[in-house]
Structure formats: structure tokens, C-alpha cells
Amino acid sequence: MKEIICKTESKSKYSIIIQNGLLDKLSTLTNFFSKYKNVVIITDKNVAKYYLTKVKRQLRKIGLDVYAIIISSGESSKSLAEAEEIYYKLQDIGITRTDLIVALGGGVVGDLAGFVAATYLRGIDFVQIPTSLLAMVDSSVGGKVGVDLGYAKNVIGSFYQPKMVLTDPTCLSTLEDKFLVDGMAEVIKYGCISSSKLFLRLMSFQYQEDLLEDMEEIIAKCVTIKRNVVESDEKEAGIRRILNFGHTIGHVIESYFKFRRYTHGEAVAIGMYQITKMSTREGITNPKALENLRYILETYGLPWELPEMEMKRVVEILSKDKKFEGDTLNVCIIPKIGKSEIVKIQKEQAIQLFK
Image (tube, rainbow, N blue to C red; front, side, top):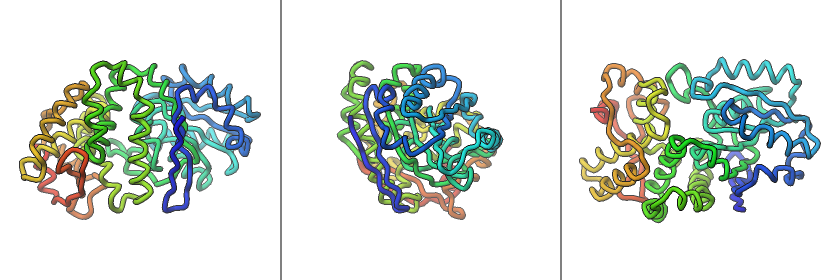
């Protein structure tokens, strides 16, 4: 078992526990869960069939009253309309500020459930139980919660830290290969921005079995990097922007294709390569870094080539990026693998990234 403590500027302090088989041991966390009477598990249809019964059983062993709200799978559920439906269900159950929400699922469930927790009754406690690799290494940690507005991703939300993150890497055994690959984009991101050792480690695996055997360590390394960044910059005023490496381009690609053609990880993979191609062309990045990035993306079955897109629509989507400050956009680049920095580019320069 690995326990990583996150302490933020807002005085939040919580444990991130990573352990194989943890979902079968939730009832041992009596000291944490017993302070609540009612627990509402928010999950989606895909995750529910694998893990909902198990988590309910474990929490009921502690003596809690456990309820479940099951949403449809996919990015379309991350909306104000879905949040409103959940508010009414929480009201019907009689949830108060002394109760708990558990987000059981991937990034969509975690973002949505966290947003609901942050806003219902002006804030109630919530716990993240991530079941996808992307959520385990990235979205479950750091307190970014929110919903989309149409195809504008994550523009409505808040920084609201969980009370605990409980990660069981064995959940990855039920993931389709496509979604394991999806999460690997974020793992590669952490190697690019902060750890050349992690990057080289990922390049050394020859078989998926070797990767999965080492997954507890890999998740812990990614989470430690993110914890360190979040503790320094909880609300993304500075260094936390490095976590957005590849995301500006990635979000445009996701939105352009209405979240159907590319997963989040696939879109971010393209974004990482394209921004690095630009910084290499400008003489900022070592050409070897671009070569290695392309190699590792291909090794893990991730795309790197920019798809054909109509520029008028691209500009329309890009203009809604929440990272803009006036006509200036903060983007993360990597001078070399394992080192990152933030540069400011003008809107016209940002548009050139898509040409």
C-alpha cells in the first residue's frame, strides 16, 4: 500500500491511498467513513456492473446507509442538466451537509460528482474512487471539478478538494484496451513534464503484462508529481499550468469531433506532439525529445498526427478555451524530456498550432 498526503493552500489535507485489492478492504477504513450517516455513490452504467455492489457491501459493513445514482457513460453526462437531475435525487434522499458523496468511476464521473458535491448545499464532502487509469493518475487528484457547456470543455466548475482518494489498480483489469491506452497518454505526460526516469521506464516495457505488474508504482509516481504541483499552486495561477501539456490542442480536437472520434488521452497525445513540434521548430526543444515522444506514442498505440479540421470551427472552439487571458494563452512546452516551462503565446500563434 502507498499513501500520499496532499496539503493545499486552502488548508485541505487528504490521503491518496493506492493499493491492489483496496475495494475489498474499504470496510477497514472505519475511522474515516463512520463519521457519516448517509453515503451516495455516483457512478455510471459501465462501472456499476463491475464495482457498485462490492463498494455498497463494504460501506454497509461499517453501518452506513448507502444510496446509488447511476448515470449514462460518456462525456455527454458531464453537463448542467445531469447535475440538476442529481441535485433533485439528493434532495429526495434527504442528503445534508454531514453526509458524503462517493465518485466511483472515471474522469467524467469524478468531475461531475465533484462538481455536485462542491455546489449542493454550498458544499458537502466527497471521496474519489477512480476506476480508469486516466482518473487514477490525473483527474481524481487536485480538486478540479466541473461540467462542460455544450462542446466547451470544463468551462463551468470549481476547485474543490476531495476528502480522500482511494485507488485500486486491479480495477484496470476490466478496462478495454482502448481506455487503458487512453490513460497512458496522461502517464506519458507526467514523464514529459517532470520525470525523464519515468519516461525511460515506460519506454522499457515490452509487454502489457509488465506494464500492469508495475502499475501501482507508476500510478504512485504520477500522483506524487501532481501532488507536488497542486500543493505549490492549487488554483492554477502558475506552475500548475504544466499539467495542461498538450491539453489546449487536445480539447479542441475532442470538441471538434464532439467527443466521438478521439478519447481524451488520444486527443492529448496529438496535442503533446504538435506543441512539441512547434517548440522544436522554434529551437526551444531538443529534436531528440520530439523523436522520442513520437516513438513512445506509437509504442503505446496513441495517435500523434493532427487530423484535418476546418479552421473556422477550430478558431471558434479555441476562442472558448478557459486558459486565455485576453488574447494571450499560457501553454506548456518541454525543452527536453522531464523538463517543462510555461510560455505565453498570442491567439494568432495558437491558431498556427492547427496548421
